[in-house]
Image 1 (cartoon, rainbow, N blue to C red):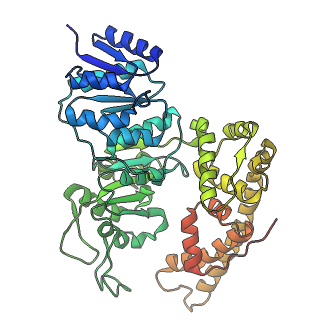
Image 2 (image 1 turned 180 degrees about the vertical axis):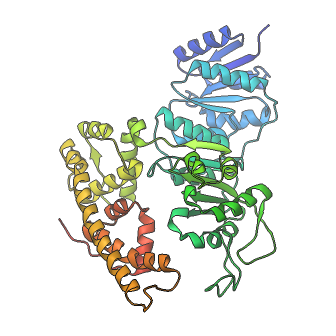
Image 3 (image 1 turned 30 degrees about the vertical axis):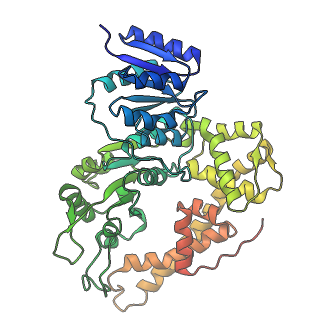
Length: 478
């Protein structure tokens, strides 16, 4: 007796044949068609226990058909297939109530497994949440690695599960966190990001949980923390491996009990925040070193999501460079294209700075080169810049060493007993930051993109520090 009846819709006869044979061998009864009208007639007549359909068909798009299917037969699982393997395809499939999204070409064993799971699961599934808006696409790429990311993000959208994103610097961890928020059920709330590595350790708890007036020296008024600001939305904890132990203990309490207290406060505050964390470090090694709580790791690592480095998905480079050129045009820069030899050269490059490095390259090409088509010769010239970057790094390190030495001499040489007052670390850190950023900007001739890369800072973080420290940026040629 057949294990179930499956309706297949695809205008490609070869795909219909392959699916018919594979599903029949697995014990299913299969009916297939090349158009949406026939599929809809079968569904309207109550046929089929599961539907497998392509998105683009001659008479109707499956995304337009899906809402009608879910309204008429809400418990009928629908698997969406598509050769348009983009982030938005996965998101739209999930938003319209599809059971699963499968990019073409698909693995037949995986498809059979998904069919079996769909037919054996209870039929109560989340309903459609309305048409997704056409936000700017945050994730780009058609590689198998990115397809897995798209599918996982689509599954997680309507949940509050805590997600741990791991990956090298520049792979786009915050973009994934924003996608989980912007396309999820908390999109009406705030997305609040905090970078643990960018905050002085003694201020992390105050930044996260807020503080009461008089809680510590300088706390002249009550201040809200990031948890309060993100209430009802998403809190993105970037570089979570740099969080001090004391703050880790407080965060664990929030995850366990759903409440926290401000610094200096006594009344527990209920928290309704989704947590997404990210790290470019191996937290298991930090746990072995006693620098990260194992119980907190398990609370954060409910859904692990690894972002691959760009060198592992080099086939995505052409799509990414076109995407960044399009963004540059929106910012007023001229449109550019890269010839095939240039694209091949980009695909062979190792990209130590990952997607962020590619984005910076695209902006340089758009801003500095007059020709519309960028050739392989230009690409070779640009990719030879790491040697120049090493020289810039050496200049910055020399300037920084001199600044630190001057600062230490001034502090330790200006007191009778040879010791300055407490708080030396953060005072010196503030004094060194100005010459450090100034040296980086001088070494890169005022180019903030290259200076941010050199310092390992996000471009927006660098711009904020330039404003806060009132650093004068002088752009020179050469």
